[in-house]
Amino acid sequence: MLNDKSLSKILGTTLPQLTIKDIHWKVQDCDREAILFYRIGNTAEAMQSFKERIASAHFAWLITNISHPDLPSNSTVIDEARWPSIQKDILDILYPLPPLKMIGITGTNGKTTTTDLVLQVAHLAGKKGLSVGTLGVREYQKQILDFGLTSPSLIDLRKFIALYGKDKDFCVMEASSHALMQSRLYGIDFDGAGWLSFSQDHLDYHKTMDSYFEAKSIIYKHLKQTAKLFVPATQTDLIQKLKKVSPQTEAAPKIASNLPIFFSTSFNRDNLEVACAIVENVFALKLSVDFNLLTSPDGRFYIQKYKSSYLVVDFAHTPDALLNICRGIKTSFPGYKLKVLFGCGGDRDRTKRPLMGAVVDEWADDVYVTSDNPRSEDPAQIIDDILKGFTRRNPRKIVDRREAVRIAFSEIGEKEVLLLAGKGHEDYILIHGIKHPYSDIREVDDFVRRNSP
Image (tube, rainbow, N blue to C red):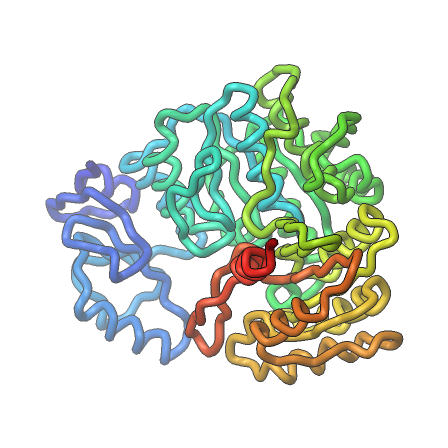
């Protein structure tokens, strides 16, 4: 519990007598014994929305960022620069961190897979862990909570670690560029880290690749002095660039073992090598695990055999990720025809759409271009943006993804790999704020089950 004296000291102001048992950043979750952090946008519309929402809200104390005559009496205005440090000071009392090893994973692609592999590899080495990322809050092969983001807020992250990490040895988390830039990992010091890749993504937010790189480089500020950040040995250019940022950068050692089919692609082997390097380094041990016990995370190179062909579902939604998986499939399945079904999300970086089209144009034998999460955009226009990248192939344009998948299934021949890219683990298609139930994995499973002998 946090008393008013402690909160007064943190805020640097005198407060009345209070009973404070919790902290929230969502109005709807708050109650009369909790602190509410509410960041008001700097527009008249944002202020009006704040006034409407706060009128029916319940909280012991409000902390916000903009002074206004209509603020309730039980509130304090603080400079936004103090936002993360004050949250941390309050969280240190209400949700103290258990004595865990902390591990952070960043990279344009591969964060989710590698985070899950760290969890699995460490478990096989006798270490109990917790992971936080795109797949929610997880223990070994078990989801505890799905919060719907790659990286939660600092408040939620600290709550997850405090509530679910008490009996664990470590916590591994995805460290997205947004989370690093927005101080969502403030006060978390990593005992080990990984940086898997760097290529174009999120330019709708970062604007330039230099800004994107600088955002990801913030992960070094979270490394303990003795900690190392591992990079796949194949990423030679990235390694050289990161060594100029910090001498704590190291190439992950190669693995010579024969591996399950999930690791037949070079990028998934890279992910495993980084995961193993982190576990060995953080826990000061020499791994001796059966890699055949490892499974692919939800929607990451999910593969099903169908007659003489294969159906693959993967979350690849950037040009580099799509290139990696297309090249990986062509290398791993020589003599097979590659068919790719994909789209691009709406209200996101439009410049990557023709780039993704160009990748598939180069590597695929047949292409179905369809919807992903169009959000507020016209899905047909998104597809047209993608088609600008094609110069060789004549892709099929099918706006409805379920229909596109049905047609692709009906056209599978002998010795083919059909890749359904972009959705991965997602079980919805987002259109104008509404999530419509849909899953590539479920479509594949249902098709294989219906057509099995």
